Image (cartoon, rainbow, N blue to C red; front, side):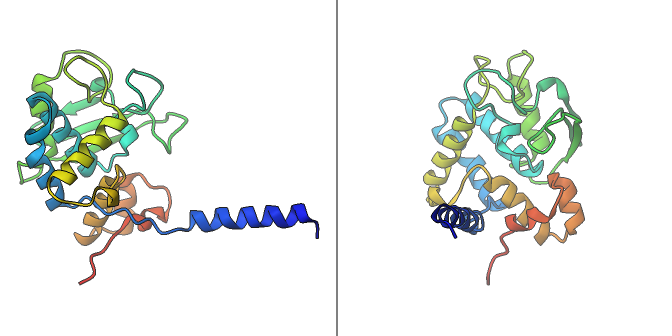
Length: 218
C-alpha cells in the first residue's frame, strides 16, 4: 500500500466525517419570527427598511425559500435565482410566486409557489408583502430591493437577522439564514404535515429535509 494511497484515504475520511457533522443551527420558530418582525423598526435605518425586511423574513419562512431566492450575492443585479417582481402575483388571500430557476433547478424549468394568508397579521406574508409593494420603487428586477433600487443582498439579509436576534437576547451564533427553512420544516412537522407534503412545500427531491427538523425535547 503506497503512502500516497494512505494520505488520500485519510483526506477522504476527514471529508466524509466533516459532511456528516450534525447541523447545529436552530430554527426560526413562529414565535421567534413574530418577535423579530416586531422589533425591526427599533433599529432599521428607516421605515422602508423595516417593511422590506419584515416582508422578506415572513416570506422566507412561509414560502420555504432559500436565501438565494430572495437576495443577490453582491450589490448589483447578476446571474442569480432571486425572485423578480414581475413573477409575483398578490391577492387578498394568497401570493403566487413563479421561480424561474433555483439551486435545485439549474436548467430553469421553473416552478410556482403559493403562499396563503395567515390569521396573525403581524407575521402574515400576504399583508406584509402588500405593505412593502405600496412603497417599493416602481422598477423591474429583484422583488426585494432598497428605496434607491439596489437589490437586497445575502450579506444584508444575514446582518439584519443577526442584529434582530441580538436585540432580543438570542445567541446569534446559533442561527443563520438557513434557520428559516429549518423553522419551516420543523413547524410543518409539528403541525402534522406528512413527509411528502413537506417535500413538496420545500421543493426537496429527497429525504434530506429530515435533517432540518428540530423537534423540541420536553
